[in-house]
Amino acid sequence: MSVQERKERERAERQRLIVATARELAERQGWDAVTTRRLAERIEYSQPVLYSHFRGKREIIGAVALQGAAELAAAVRAAASGANGPRERVAALAHAYLDFAERNPAVYDAIFQLDGGLAFAQEDTPEPLKDAFAALLESLGEVAGDGVPPGLFTETFWAALHGLATLTRAGRLPPEDTGARVELLVDRLAVV
Image (tube, rainbow, N blue to C red; front, side):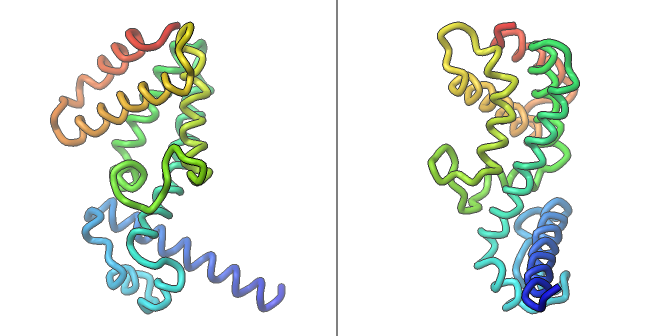
């Protein structure tokens, strides 16, 4: 291995460490607790080293969001692939989405609530965000109904899931009724 390859590998490992540490800190104490000073202390590098990887907290949030979007896409696909038939796929997708939001609140916030400097629904949208939407579209597109554009249906269903995730987490909806809400959403929106 050349010196250059070793340096690139070490740089990539430092970047992974910064993102993992930020994510862990945010999940435990919230995003307000994530500062470059705190991250530098935790990973035992200087703040200038952090700034050589990320210009600031916004870019770190963006990196966590991209990682989280890839995980969300994988979770949705895994759940949908294990289901039989369109209705079961949509219900499994919805439960996987809501479970992801509940288990990873700081990552969910990084993807959908916080400014990570990422473009959504544009030409320059990063691939992990496009893929997370595609993971939803794969199952939802087949239940959109006649004359309903699959992308538009997916956006609407996703908005409903996001609302359920956000309102449940905020204590505005009782979590014990999540299953009934998913059933209602699937029964009323999806054409199966």
